[in-house]
Amino acid sequence: MVAEAVAETALVSQEPDRDDVFLRLIEQFEPALRRLAAAYFDREADRADLFQDIALALWQAIPSFRRESSERTWLYRIAHNVAISSSAKTHRQAKREEFLSEEFEHPSAAAGAEQGLLLGEKRRALVDSIRRLAATDRQIILLHLEGLSYADIEEVSGFSETAVATRLSRIRAKLKEEIRKREVGKP
Amino acid sequence: MNGQDELHDLWCSQPFLKTGRGEDVLRLVQKRTNRFDRAMLVRNWIECIAAGVVVATFVFFALRAEDALARTGAFVIAASATWIIFYLLRYGRGPRDVDPSLDLRGYTQALVHRYDHQIKLLKSVKYWYLLPPYLGLLLWSLGILRDKARTTALSWSDSIPPMIYTTVFAAIWWLNEVYSVRRLRQERARLLEMTANSEGRTK
Image (cartoon, rainbow over all chains, first blue to last red; front, side, top):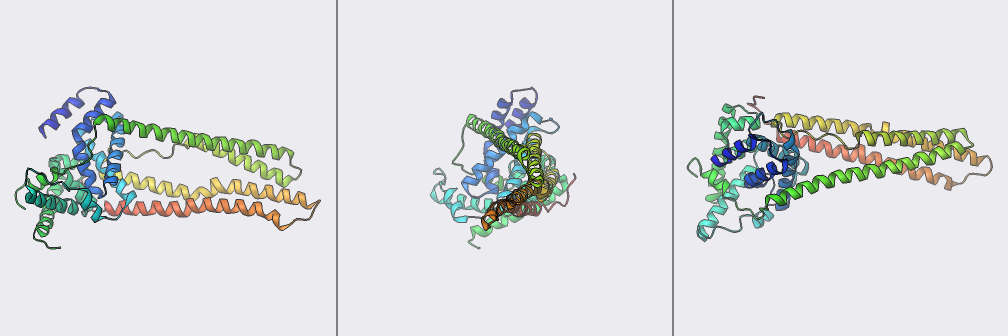
């Protein structure tokens, strides 16, 4: 979080080359953008396409960035908007089996096999539950999970901080309940 | 589950198989942009050249036509093709991309507006894109048939060309007004459904 904020200040304090800005943004936010893609699509190929679409939109938008908002909120706005329009176009059916085999198949060796499996199962439950949320709720929880403040979430989503807090409380409870259900083996 | 940050930790611990270098992503993005620009340019020039050939051919036919109906039809086709060239040169890049840095509400509204515009445009294609050259072809064919009928008897095979181009025009109309409009309406509905829950917005 702190490193991101420092890098962000450096980015907006000068007029760097478009390619340099893009490279720094991608290097800084690629994991977050890939996680975002995972929250919209289950298939690896779709996620890779979405990541590319977001990267393309970012690259095209860099020259018109007005610095009226922070670079991080600007980036997340672009990423979520592209993800929403992309999933409205694609509308693929969930393919649970492919998802299971493609992702989370390498539990951390350090954590031990059993713990790794348990962690993998929890992650699967979390991502699954997030994918089932309405787009607006999904946007809010994803921004929250990426560490944005309520004020930043308001800037990205257009929801007031109060509305964000209310929704987050409800969404978090829902996600925890889904994960708990999965842990105890309920459908 | 317990603890404020457990969801965050769980979320951020996702492993990803594909994490390319920034330079690779940049190259990919630049390649995609260049490829798109080149594809649009090539497509527009091919269509312009084809339309130019149509203009030249039908002006030539019009000047040589004995029958007034055939001459009028050929001029209508040439005029329609000229209009298509103008349209491609003026609007050939398609609609402007919606600014993705808007907030979700603004972005959704802009996308819906663009969907509505595209649907309206596709539904009007028959009037400004298909009907003029089709009517021109009909007039030209009728003129040629009338001219031919003055010297020889017409046979059923004379109706084949009009049937072929009528089928082609009908297929283009169906692709635009039925298939594409249906697809755009579905996308528009999905977008609205996805973003419907907007209670508590400040903007």
